[in-house]
Length: 75
Image 1 (cartoon, rainbow, N blue to C red):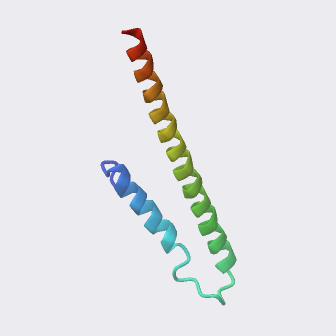
Image 2 (image 1 turned 90 degrees about the vertical axis):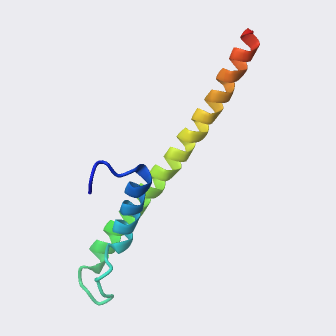
């Protein structure tokens, strides 16, 4: 994967890659639990990352609002 991909493209690639984990593993495969556990771990990592990113975006939005208020009060 190229380093020049957009953030959205990288997110889609990661989601597709994780979704494909264990795609070829049958329910009778002795290694299925390992592969499925790895997929669950990857899903958890992505979920946590998305939540942290949203939290930071909200924090930045709130900081921008506070800075704007401070500038307006300083006039």
